[in-house]
Length: 104
Image 1 (cartoon, one colour):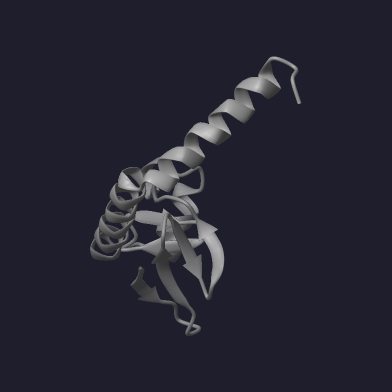
Image 2 (cartoon, rainbow, N blue to C red; image 1 turned 90 degrees about the horizontal axis):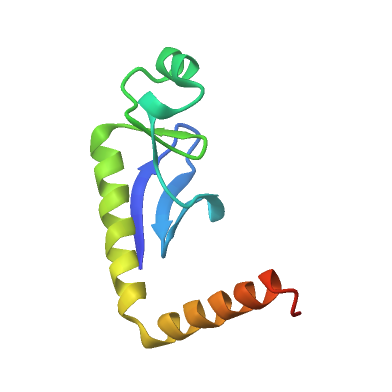
């Protein structure tokens, strides 16, 4: 399921697709960062004073961030309930455990 978050000034679409934020179809971020906690806080405030969150390189207002976070939360709920996704998470966890123990 795809949810439109915003259209940038240059016409690219920032969308939530599954568990990721995509800008013009390319992966941009897998989560939101509060501007107040961002390492480039001052620069962001100078460029986009109404931004409350960042999605990768894209500043978001409070309303846009709420839409994005809601879509990410719904996608996570769907994935957590999917039996195939549960099986895949266990498979990956077993691979990581084996790698930690030196088994490849």
